[in-house]
Length: 114
Image 1 (cartoon, rainbow, N blue to C red):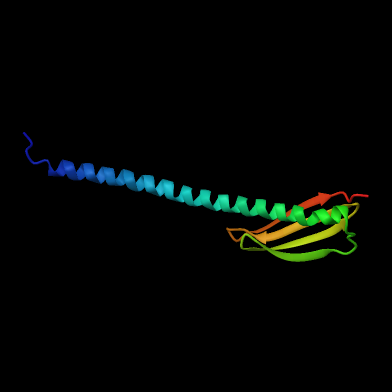
Image 2: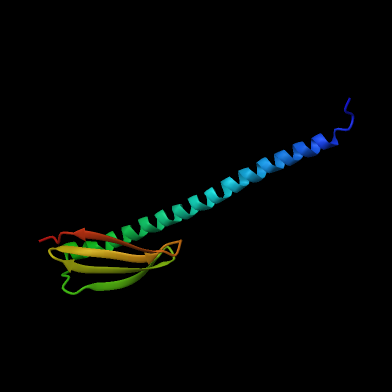
């Protein structure tokens, strides 16, 4: 009969430790990825909202003869906003660098009110 069970306890502890390490190695990268994507979407939403707000006066009041460019700091990011006429549309574009250091561009188009 086995009276020395220390090898079994060691093996059980080793298996439990392996399961914990595998769980952490799966959960940690997923958590970091989700946080990064959440920040990207939050930045994008705030930038698009600001672009929408900036393009509104050009739709209803101001004349846009020449392209206009301005730089805004939105959520800690330098965003280049450009308004121009493209045919009969007013085009507003935003350019910025996201959390992953990739350049992003988003454009809105609008009819000028007459």
